[in-house]
Image (cartoon, rainbow, N blue to C red; front, side, top):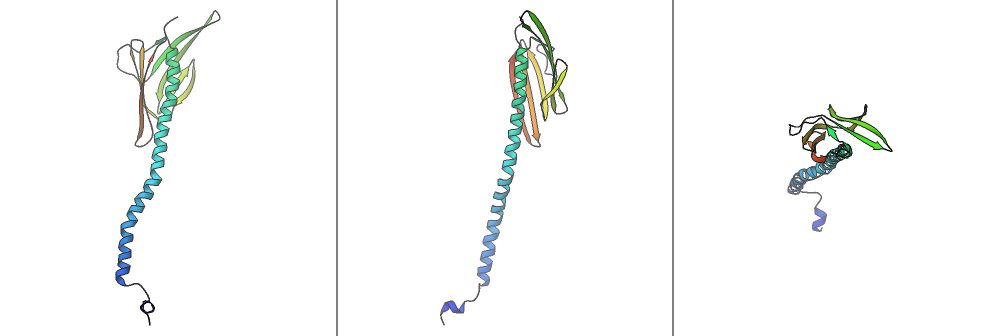
Length: 161
């Protein structure tokens, strides 16, 4: 009989070696799988925070650059709400506008001429400050625990006509 015909199974040492290799590989594979499943979620949450503040700043930029005056005190510490006013002149007529921004829970509210809309969600902090004709707005958004996006923008009030 040949040598191969006498071997019928694995020895104890071969089985132990296989178990040891699996014990080394299993945690590595587990962490790779866990990372592959959680990283996309964190990336999506970070993008949500960034896109949330981006859309909010589009509204703020548009509105504040139209404004001619504000209730913000020049040189005072920042506050969480602000009111802006301006007058548009069209074809010999004029239209006055009043605009207010305020944080309601985690929603940034925009009230233009008495009509309120939400321009930012999951906003944890907003600060308005004035230095001369420059308005500084800082917004912090947090769509999920551990994910925040903080941005600051400086805008100029429109000169009076």
